[in-house]
Amino acid sequence: MAEDKNIQKDQSIHIGQCIKAELERQGRSITWLAGEVHCTRENLYKLLRNPWISTDMLFRVSEALSHDFFEEYSKLLSFNCAK
Image (cartoon, rainbow, N blue to C red; front, side):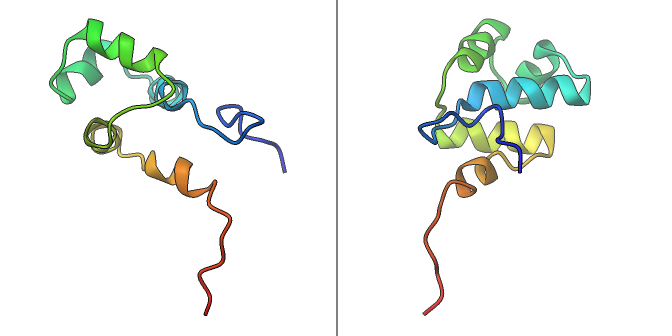
């Protein structure tokens, strides 16, 4: 199985890169997303450079792009929930 390019060797996620990749996949612009999440284009550019993001903003971005970015983090969990 190919390793996700947004998951680094130390198993951390650069969520800004994940969001940018999804924006490009959907053919949407930074300006569009900024309007959807109610922030300025400049702040959104800063957000995309960051490897982390607040859960509130991640939720808003997930809703706007109809993509569960929280799942990117869930994929890293390796514990077994079975009792």
